[in-house]
Length: 195
Image (cartoon, rainbow, N blue to C red):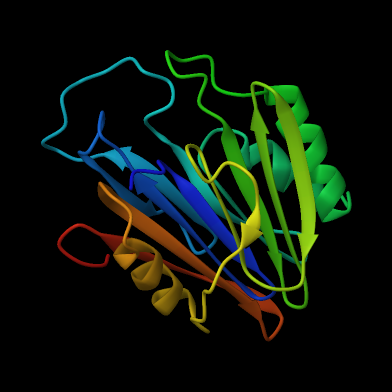
């Protein structure tokens, strides 16, 4: 089944996976210790599509923000300024709205804290944000309402690998986050291995 880009969010661990039929030549790269960015690979055709390259994970506030587009930055900025995680998600998702592409692609995002998780989506017809006490998944297609999801990795590396390996079609790359011990850690899983 193809569900597009998705996030899995729970207390202390989360993941984001790029799944794409249209732009398969992408990878996740590290930008410093606290940001992961989706970028085209060297083999990718040039495009002016604004939804192809973006920060997909950032350390912020008491945790980390993950998501499928440019909304990750304003969520992280609000969270860094002291907004509660739920409010940062709601305000940024509402302001940026769904992607204005040919598919009205939803924006999905989450905030991972040491002892809590928050997950959200803005679609053409709804804005949903929930606090979660167990891992939940939300995706751009088919699975476009947050739902409980079995996801047991305990490290950023395991989260990225597990998300990449999930049995959904067209895996391109993945990012994993773990929040604990006073900080956030990040990991990357690209086609062909980690960075």
